[in-house]
Amino acid sequence: MHLLASVSFFMLHLRMAGGARLRQHRSIRKQVHIPNATISDDVEMPIISIGTGGNERGLSFMIVEAWLSIGGRGIDTSYSNWNQYDVGAAILRSGVPREELFITTKIPGCYAVDTYVQKNLEQLGLRYLDMVLLEFSMPYRLCAKSWHQLEKLVEEGVIRAIGVSNFRRVWLGALMEVATVKPAVHQIELSVFHPNWDTVEVSHAYNIKTQAYTPFGSESVQKRIVGNAVVQQIAQNHKVTPRQVALRWLLQRQHLLVITSVMVKHQLIDADVFSFNLLPEELDELDRLGDS
Image (cartoon, rainbow, N blue to C red):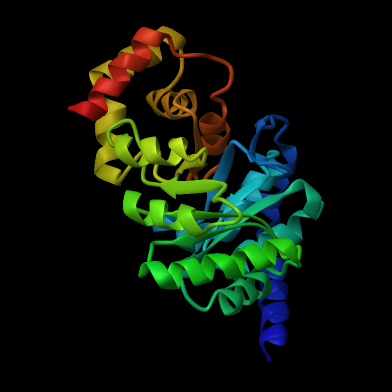
């Protein structure tokens, strides 16, 4: 029944996807060019992925379809978003070869790992997952057991890389004591107004890549970032937007990014952050925004 429901859901979206929107995407000449970062010995992922959660979760089919049409290949999703059938339908519709994609999904908490991994595979219509994150931490012993289950799935080729999301310093330290395969990525809340220095410090000390899932924070914080005089001045210096400055600051502070742009034109702008570099004094100014 689950398989039939999945196929029906995919076919429904394939029929309903707007032809006008597809023609618009195909007519776009500009493409994003996003480099990869090495996150473990034999795994690379795009530095920027597109997010499918938050307030935009109901638009996930459109978001992923647009992102893939302009050359984006990193997709960040989660079982808890309740929209992975839509994400999978957009992937199927795109025709992009599976090996070109890097798909990250998450497990809510530290239990029923095998069940949740199978549900993620089913909902996304995939045979393997590029990365699975344990989202939030549960009691230490339970997380240790779950982590060993993920390690086994890596060994079996079901998952290529594993990581965590929103782990506190003590939880991360406890996990590192028992991990055979260390977390490749720690996905956390990060923005120029919320640099999360402590979590970043401990993650980088363990040689774990940090990834910002909220590079602009909440809607109110985003308005503060875009309207901030320091950010605006730096944007003028480089002839870019304040959003691009905020994203570039994260990149130069060695973070991977998950952006949440819905429209193609916004995705193109947000991903265009590799053609300029912030000066050391500009980085320091932006650091101070988080400190204050």
